Image: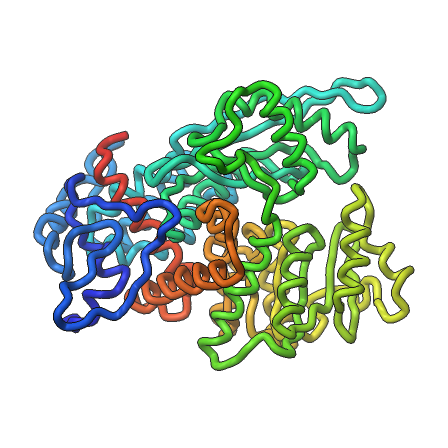
Amino acid sequence: MLSARSSYSLASRVLFAHLPATSITMTPTFQPHRLSSTSSKQPPKKHLVTHEEGVHQTMQLSKNWRNKPLFRRQGDVRFKSGLEASKLLIAESKRRDAHEIEYIESITSTMECLSPLFDRNPRYAFVAKQLMEPERFVQFRVAWTDDNGVIRLNRGFRIQYSSALGPYEGPLHLGAHINGGLIKALGFDNVFSNGLTGYDVGSSVGGSDFNPFDKSETEVQRFCQSYMTELAKYVGPDLDHPTMGMGVSEREMGYLHGQYKRINVKSTSSGVPFMTRKDSHVPGHAVVLFAKEMLKDRNQSLMGKRCLILGSGKNARSVAAKLLEFGAIPLTFSDESGHVYEPNGIDESKLKTISNIKEERGAMLGRYVISSTTAKFNEPGSIFDIPCDLCFPCGKIKTVDTDAVTKLADNGCMGVIEGGHKQVTLEGRHALKSRGVMYGPHIVTLTGANIVHGHGHNLSNEDLESEVKRIYNDVKSAATEFNARGDLFAGGSMVGFLRVANAMLSHGAV
């Protein structure tokens, strides 16, 4: 039997929430809940999504859902356990979207984590089935003219996955690797990432298969203007808020925002500029703060930790700057040309030099070795052969696979904290768990952009650290309650799903 204390835990009070619409109460935007101790004279605290306390109020009602068919395509298909429900949902996604590999991987890893929820409340399996289909997926042609006067074509995407909690919000990604399946997978992951923050914000992701790194500045501007001309039909203040993602820096956001202002009258909401370029360093700083919380659970700190950084974009450099603040030692950066390794660490002066190089469009990291007498370029051959304490992958997706995890663990790495989207493969995630290496998943660590938007860009370092600590504790407590202690991916998936699912239950079949 659960103790009285368990009724105060985040997941228990959400899990058996009363299902009618009148029971749903969301925390106002910009004022996320905080758990605090209550005296014996005060009534038990109610969770942000339910009026109920305790864990057994709707158990009788929820059990009835186990007798209903989850699918009725070729006869009624029912499930007897949460694991069976998750397998049915995964099989259905493979049947419908077998060609979208990244999306199938996201569905598989998430549904496996949610199976304990389906066991306790079978109705959530039906909500998960509904959530597997995005609300809207737009694909369009982006035509632009290069410097030689040749008309070039790219595909533009915007998936508005879920607005259950509020207006859509999510990043834009640019790169040759962007396709519809990847955008769909990132949109699905973003549902849980945005949901677990506690803010009233939905999920969306967009981008294009345009590579900005081998184009001139004028070509990038022409592309961004053409892309936004079509995208503006679907985004806007209080509707869909695009943020920076892979391959999208402050300059790209500036071009996109400029074109949006040209063709729209309204470009602000409640005094908050639409697609603002401020506080672009916060997502990287939030990644480091999550790493700090993870180390604190092991009675350790970032001081003196030798850190591998994969990538050299804005987020990677923000991670390095924040690591230096806490006394950690960044060792590497990488890009398409290879990696640079400073055996004695990258200090503020060296970081500034690298930033100056990377802010020039198309510049490769190899130029850095000219200005440093101690730097090594592509030595050793694999960046994962460098001994380190922590690894922060902030570059291309699926950078850390099983072989990389083996090398990192053998060299004494104690944690991999994602500073970019889907940096660790599904197999790599399993390898991290089997080797006992800490893992900070992107659905948890990349919540910095939401924190910024949730505070209206008036965010102090203390507020950021407080919000990171709150989110981390929510995720950790949910993972512990469902026998997944230390599994932040499972905890983050559960917390995000519960908040979105309870809102969806009040909306009916939409």
